[in-house]
Length: 115
Image 1 (cartoon, rainbow, N blue to C red):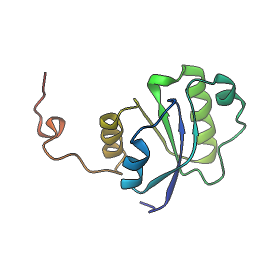
Image 2: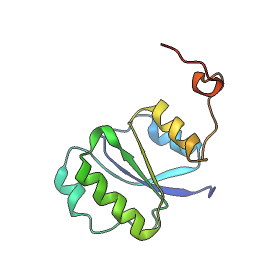
Image 3: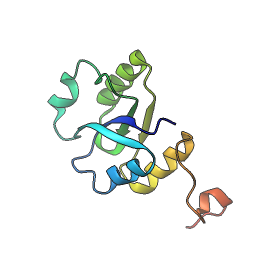
Image 4: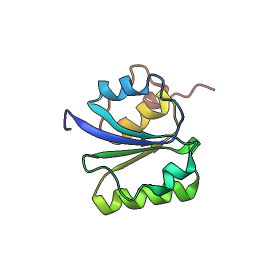
């Protein structure tokens, strides 16, 4: 993994402690487009040139916006990570992408489920 991976985030008004979580995994946010302003989402003709990862927060985006940015990423050979905007969802998706490590005692890793 590149120690200075640049990511573009689409969705969510605020990121809270997500930037630090990503930095802990060697990912820096180069650009963030909120989920509220649809005109910003649609008018972007391309991804910034330094984008190495596209993160879509699915609970803040419509299908057309996601489709548009997935297509831009595919055109540029940029991997896409899609998940809800929560620390747990991001950690789980990073593990699935091979970027992160499972949390110690995670019930999903041991086959146990908390209900």
